[in-house]
Image 1 (tube, rainbow, N blue to C red):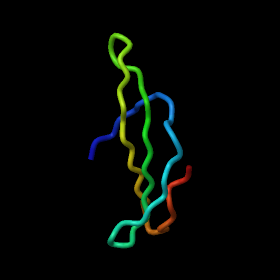
Image 2: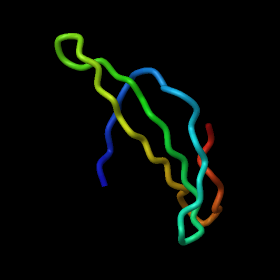
Image 3: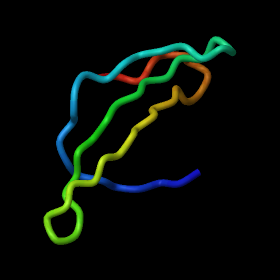
Image 4: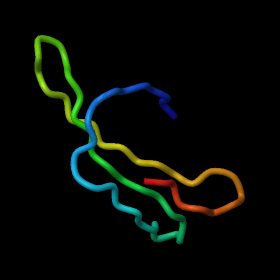
Amino acid sequence: MMRTLITGQLYGDPRSRVSQAGKPFTTAKLRADGKDGATVWCSLVALATGSSGREASD
């Protein structure tokens, strides 16, 4: 697992989904500033944690 801190602008709306195993997760895209003014696109995946089984919030 990789833990990072990325700042930028959310691109589009996050999508709540369910895996083939029935576990909820949310996907999103983030536009961040890179070196020399370049744009860096980041794909985000938020997984539910613990035993609550709740989906990640928007």
